[in-house]
Length: 99
Image (cartoon, rainbow, N blue to C red; front, top):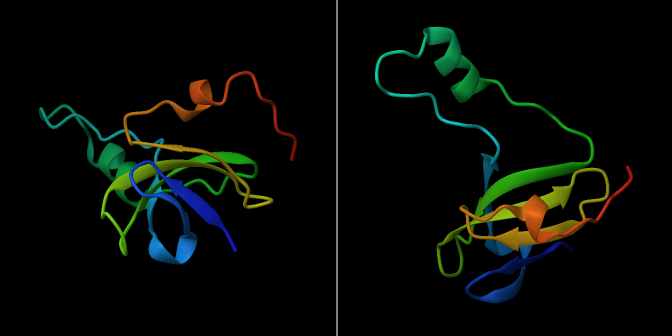
Protein backbone atom coordinates (compact mmCIF):
# COMPACT_ATOMS: atom_id res chain seq x y z
CA UNK A 1 0.00 0.00 0.00
CA UNK A 2 1.27 3.45 -0.93
CA UNK A 3 0.38 6.32 1.41
CA UNK A 4 0.26 9.81 -0.14
CA UNK A 5 0.35 12.78 2.22
CA UNK A 6 -2.28 15.21 0.88
CA UNK A 7 -1.32 18.79 1.88
CA UNK A 8 -4.97 19.48 2.81
CA UNK A 9 -6.27 16.14 4.18
CA UNK A 10 -3.17 14.41 5.55
CA UNK A 11 -1.97 10.86 4.82
CA UNK A 12 -4.31 8.83 2.60
CA UNK A 13 -4.17 5.55 0.67
CA UNK A 14 -3.16 5.96 -2.97
CA UNK A 15 -6.50 4.44 -4.03
CA UNK A 16 -8.08 7.83 -3.22
CA UNK A 17 -5.89 9.51 -5.86
CA UNK A 18 -5.78 9.59 -9.66
CA UNK A 19 -2.45 9.81 -11.46
CA UNK A 20 -2.42 12.84 -13.76
CA UNK A 21 1.06 12.74 -15.27
CA UNK A 22 4.60 14.06 -15.35
CA UNK A 23 4.95 17.24 -13.30
CA UNK A 24 8.14 18.29 -15.08
CA UNK A 25 6.61 18.88 -18.52
CA UNK A 26 6.41 22.58 -19.46
CA UNK A 27 3.51 23.72 -21.63
CA UNK A 28 4.68 25.36 -24.89
CA UNK A 29 4.03 29.06 -25.40
CA UNK A 30 0.67 29.85 -26.96
CA UNK A 31 1.87 32.95 -28.82
CA UNK A 32 2.22 31.07 -32.11
CA UNK A 33 5.97 30.52 -31.86
CA UNK A 34 5.63 26.84 -30.88
CA UNK A 35 5.99 24.24 -33.61
CA UNK A 36 3.85 21.16 -34.16
CA UNK A 37 6.81 19.06 -33.01
CA UNK A 38 6.94 20.98 -29.73
CA UNK A 39 3.24 20.37 -29.11
CA UNK A 40 3.54 16.70 -30.13
CA UNK A 41 6.34 16.28 -27.59
CA UNK A 42 4.30 17.99 -24.86
CA UNK A 43 1.10 16.01 -25.48
CA UNK A 44 2.33 12.54 -26.39
CA UNK A 45 5.95 11.88 -25.41
CA UNK A 46 6.78 10.83 -21.86
CA UNK A 47 9.96 9.62 -20.25
CA UNK A 48 9.92 6.51 -18.11
CA UNK A 49 12.56 7.48 -15.54
CA UNK A 50 14.23 5.12 -13.13
CA UNK A 51 14.59 6.76 -9.72
CA UNK A 52 13.21 10.05 -8.43
CA UNK A 53 10.37 11.54 -10.45
CA UNK A 54 7.94 14.43 -9.87
CA UNK A 55 4.35 13.51 -10.68
CA UNK A 56 0.95 15.22 -10.55
CA UNK A 57 -1.88 13.42 -8.76
CA UNK A 58 -5.46 14.48 -7.95
CA UNK A 59 -7.14 13.60 -4.66
CA UNK A 60 -10.20 12.32 -6.53
CA UNK A 61 -11.97 10.71 -3.57
CA UNK A 62 -11.12 13.46 -1.12
CA UNK A 63 -10.61 17.21 -1.36
CA UNK A 64 -10.18 17.03 -5.19
CA UNK A 65 -7.00 19.15 -5.08
CA UNK A 66 -4.05 18.56 -7.38
CA UNK A 67 -0.81 17.68 -5.64
CA UNK A 68 2.77 17.16 -6.71
CA UNK A 69 4.46 13.95 -5.56
CA UNK A 70 8.18 13.18 -5.56
CA UNK A 71 8.35 9.40 -5.89
CA UNK A 72 11.08 6.83 -6.39
CA UNK A 73 9.82 4.83 -9.38
CA UNK A 74 11.95 1.82 -8.44
CA UNK A 75 10.80 1.39 -4.83
CA UNK A 76 7.53 3.39 -5.05
CA UNK A 77 8.65 5.31 -1.95
CA UNK A 78 6.97 8.71 -1.61
CA UNK A 79 9.76 11.15 -0.77
CA UNK A 80 7.74 14.39 -0.57
CA UNK A 81 4.37 15.88 -1.46
CA UNK A 82 3.18 19.43 -1.94
CA UNK A 83 1.07 21.76 -4.01
CA UNK A 84 1.75 21.97 -7.77
CA UNK A 85 3.72 25.22 -7.32
CA UNK A 86 6.10 23.66 -4.75
CA UNK A 87 9.67 22.70 -5.62
CA UNK A 88 9.87 19.25 -4.04
CA UNK A 89 13.57 18.79 -4.81
CA UNK A 90 14.40 21.84 -2.66
CA UNK A 91 11.85 20.75 -0.05
CA UNK A 92 13.72 17.47 0.56
CA UNK A 93 16.92 19.30 1.41
CA UNK A 94 20.22 17.70 0.48
CA UNK A 95 18.91 14.12 0.42
CA UNK A 96 20.45 11.76 -2.07
CA UNK A 97 18.59 8.59 -3.00
CA UNK A 98 20.28 5.73 -4.76
CA UNK A 99 18.46 3.49 -7.20
